[in-house]
Length: 125
Image (tube, rainbow, N blue to C red; front, side):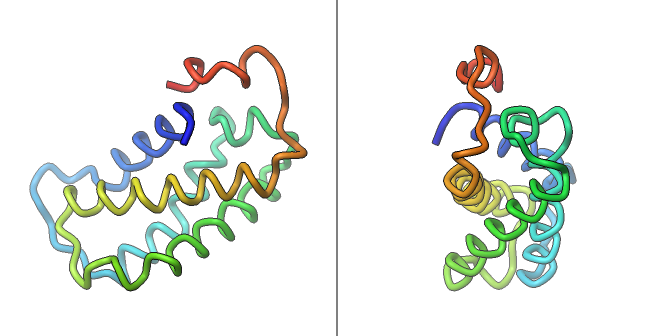
């Protein structure tokens, strides 16, 4: 996983795991939140997944949503029935986010923009 993907995942996890005190969230609610929040975070206009791929907002969100759905399904049996936020949300958010980021890159590799900004992972930290 590249550095800009890690950075995006970290930022998303901070957003989704914002409560200061641990909160128990059931798996269904957490998965539903990830299904919508992760693609939205990926496809924010100032993020790598929008700025370094020649895609529309809709194409970005459709690809990110598909990748997220697949990654959630592939990890469904491993995600606990109750998640202690922010610890479990951070852990599983990192796993699902990394999976979805890599799947997004693979799906849209032909649309990746090659320039100094996009080719330098330190620009996305």
